[in-house]
Length: 386
Image 1 (cartoon, rainbow, N blue to C red):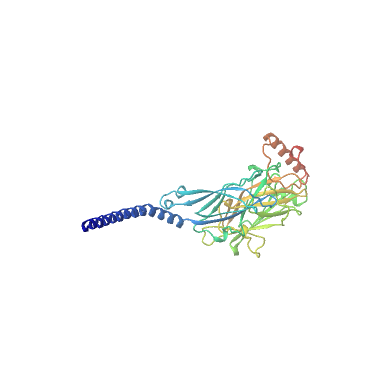
Image 2: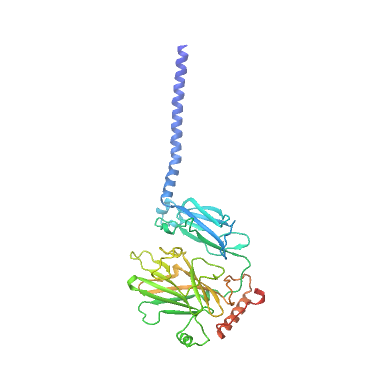
């Protein structure tokens, strides 16, 4: 009896020892599996930032749009980005999908990354044409620029069908440059139906009241040495005109909100690592938070909405921040894209698709010739555009 009991106890101890060995092996195996995952996850979170993004989708009239599908990609850097010479290729992408609620709002959070890409908006009957939106979440980001529920990033969609013929295209891009050592005229004058920069003799004729040319837009660049900044003022060239600058591309020019002029302030940073772009209506007023460019990014966009002439022509001028080049001696505003509705009082700035190229060329030439004869001519759209 005792021998049987001893044998059972021995077998039990041997089984316990064997189970402990198996358990130890499983724990080691589990550690070997989980430890790299834990290290990679910790490194990934250490090299990225928590994504918290809030957005609002509106139509062209400012009404919230519900049920808008938002495909987005959260891109993060892996630890390999610091070990290989091409870090941009060593990333991790995660696709997420969101949909706006009844108030047109959506949010993306709960992820880690250094870049968020909103790759278009989708809703039946509406269209979104803006390029891919990039929101950087870098180790040196400024938290004041991060979206929050009370100040979401606003996107606008256009209802399909409300289009017209507009004057646009690469040939209509305009540019302006200013020098601090230029003691003469530091203002550039533009005719937006050409468009072209007015020559000196045309400016003199315009100032004498001749009707064969007109200035729609005046751009003035002034270096302010005491503040180490450029002051760039945009103003309409006609007395009854108006101007405003937004950071959203609208399909319809705003109906209200136009001012006699608006000013950019371009600051030279002391550390010389990054330039600063601010929009203020006067040097004594606070910064407009939605237009604040503390660290200029290549995807920053400024849209100048212009109302000019007696016939009320509406235009949109796109100015990309990466095409603003300046130092203490020179300022260059390169290739501002101009889109103009040539029809009196109409605010649509979206080109109707599928217009034959021959018809576009003929209509453009006819409109421009009419304006050369009378800059304040009232042109109405042809029947096929109504």
